[in-house]
Length: 451
Ligand SMILES: Cc1cc2nc3c(=O)[nH]c(=O)nc-3n(C[C@H](O)[C@H](O)[C@H](O)COP(=O)(O)OP(=O)(O)OC[C@H]3O[C@@H](n4cnc5c(N)ncnc54)[C@H](O)[C@@H]3O)c2cc1C
Image (spheres, rainbow, N blue to C red):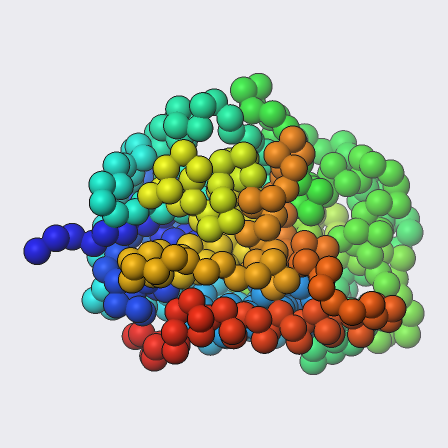
């Protein structure tokens, strides 16, 4: 008996989705995950698909590109989307989950799947695919040993940058009388978030404290290039006194029911677990030192006795230059038996990472069944991600969330009204993904192992 022809390295968002797509079509997969024996700077458990920062998959509105991506992934039978829906917590028009419930359920599904052999061990180097395939889905915190091996394979062309994690506080340690419940513009059930209102004086004092707070220094050997979508708050504060008030501390659409007015600035807290005991400071990624985080954040109204469940932190992000090295199927140009999936390809986000895993799984299923693979068209959110990875300018390549700007709408008839145009893009993308699924993968099999 021969072993599986596909080895997936990394049991994160991309790796589990890729393995699931193969397994549900009857293809055996070996999934290597190095935790718990070796862990990363951000993971805290041994679970697969662990959310290392926010507990949100962002907007669930199909009029938003990431909302469309969710619908497309559901059309193809995404494991991550199935379990995210099951573990959802209230979050306005976003899809946020109880992170523990979610990761536990994904892990249980993978462990119970007879087609997936989960091996808890590190791949210290890129293995030889032999007559099979290797998928590298090791994420932004790829182990040093494997990163070194990849670097050698890519000829020294690798990029670094930093992201920062937002802190989480214990709800019972906050003075809730200083906060109020409201979602921006009354979205969702209207009161999904807790908001910390700040007067102008309190805001200015807070900004000054942030700027003065001691930060974790950058390592010399890594280049500090921030991703604009995930800037640490103190970096934003340093850009100007109003920057935070127009960023993560924006009060607009957050009327305080007690005063009937919007405050001068506000910090939003998003529920992080079903029990409503943990609250995430939305957009508050930071590289302040831990003691400084305690000191500075406790100056916020209601936070005098705040207990931190997790502190914000600085982290490395490893990704390769997608357009220089990958084709639209995420195959390595130097060896098409090696494929990459997830954040390491230069997509950004839990969902985008899972989406690339889904596409790589679909490609491999077709190849294993002896067919030339069909790609999702660039006019879909899925295809837009492969377009970003394979067709961007390699000179200016950087991590990207899915956006409407990446979706090819050149074949659409002229529609002036922006909202109507978006509606048409969404309508067409969903139809095209369904057609692609049927042509590339055949009728969708029953979900494997669903509870
Ligand atoms: C600190 C941090 C905060 C982030 N915050 C957010 C956020 O709030 N929202 C968001 O949407 N995205 C966030 N991201 C970005 C990104 O979406 C997530 O990192 C996402 O988990 C990427 O999915 P992935 O499958 O590519 O990698 P991961 O989910 O990280 O999975 C990779 C897996 O590979 C394993 N591994 C690594 N090397 C090896 C090896 N050599 N052998 C075997 N296993 C290995 C790791 O243990 C890990 O389980 C954040 C990233 C980081 C690092």
